[in-house]
Amino acid sequence: MICLTLSEPTIQQAVERVKKEREYIDMVELRLDFLTKKECEKASTFPSLVDLPCIVTNRRVQDGGKCALSEKQRRAQLLAAMDGDFKYIDIEEDLKRGELDEKAEARGIKIIRSLHDFSCVPDDIFSRIQQLRKRADVAKVAVTPRGIADVMTLFNAQKELEGTEKIIIGMGPYGVPTRILYKRMGSMLTFCSDNQTAPGQLSSRTLKQLYRADRVDDKTAIYAIIGNNVMSSLSPCIHNPGFAGIKYNAIYVPFLVDSVRAFFALAENLKIRGFSVTVPYKLEVLSYLGNITREVKQIGACNTVVRMPGLWKGINTDYYGFLAPIEKDIEEGRIKSALVLGAGGASNAIVWALRNRNVRVTILNRTLSRAEKIAQINICQFDKLENYHDYEGQVDLIVQTTTVGYDSWENPVEGFRLTGREICYDIITKPKETKFLADAKAAGCTVHYGIEMLIAQGKLQFEAFTGYHYPRSVQPDLSTGSL
Figure 1 (tube, one colour):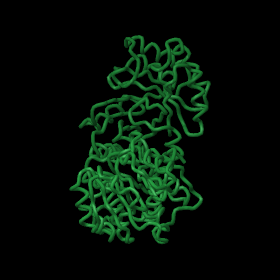
Figure 2: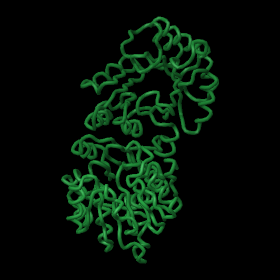
Figure 3: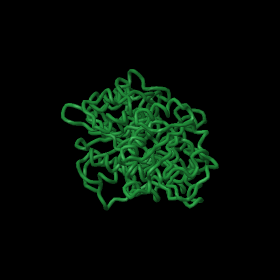
Figure 4: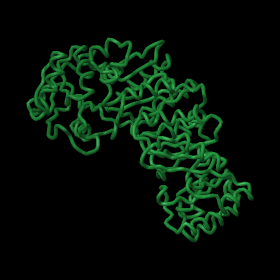
């Protein structure tokens, strides 16, 4: 079940929220700690106003909630709310058996006993869950993984606690996969919210429509994206709709990774079929691969890993993805020379792609030694970025690969005089239009967006993952990060 956590201050607003998100959810959790004191007195009426099973809880500040009342007052609010037709009540681990349990049992309300830990995943988490289950109908733990090894511990809960009715949540960015793949963990539900009432929560629409999390079963093939900034990645908006388009029982999930070694162990545990690789692991994954393509060998970086019989295979789709929007211009002779701004992780693939199409390339970078290293491998020119004015009117293509413009309205070559004949290409995907491209458009240049490269390389990844072409009927809208 997908359970919507309600954080509205009034009952009426909570009801309206349920109506708005009804098509995406199966259950709701009413948080008394978000209601005003006056509205809390009406909480017992809430279940009769919605057509879904309801959980009631009154979360203390120490457990991530907002209730700062005395314990007696907090329990009194819960007791009054239980006059309503709630399906579950959520009671904290440390509360001794008392009037809340007695009233719940008398009214047929199932009890969830919950443990919250905002610092770590406790070493004794499995025994804690078993102890909670002895005192309640459902055991719930919401803990904070600090790395991918902790995430694997949470995914092991299914086999360690088979048959135990439970809710296991990994909070924070490392825990996001546990919220999406909750069924693989044996959890009866996952919580969602538009305003993250708990760290790492996703919206109901994202869980239901993008990830189809409620449809995951034992046969669902799992694919992933790993890296340092994967939570803002648009790749799930390419792959998940693509899987649906070919009716493939599969899901593509972001994993924040701190250890490549630990992720490969998790990949074996979950039987992950393939994954995308982003910064900073495109080089580090190479030592775990049993087979690599020519592009990976030449570029020295891998952005796609696919499970093969007995080994992992490394592929680089950045090469072809980058070329896709400008291939025709190269073939027809409109691009014979290029400036590549930056010498980071993506530059090597881009420079190699251009050189393989016989384009003359000059790499400009603040740190000259990094530009020199790529230039030596690809037999091209290099210079300091500060000398960019020397190349005005001298090139057909300018490719912007630095992070400048990602979170600021800046242009790494501010004031570069464009003739209007140049083709300008920025590989940044968010925002869609950077200042570099805005300046290029204003000068009359043809521009290409990072989203074009992302979609092109993503479709090639999709083919590597599934063996099928990306469905023509699916057109993901990556400009807004939604379908």
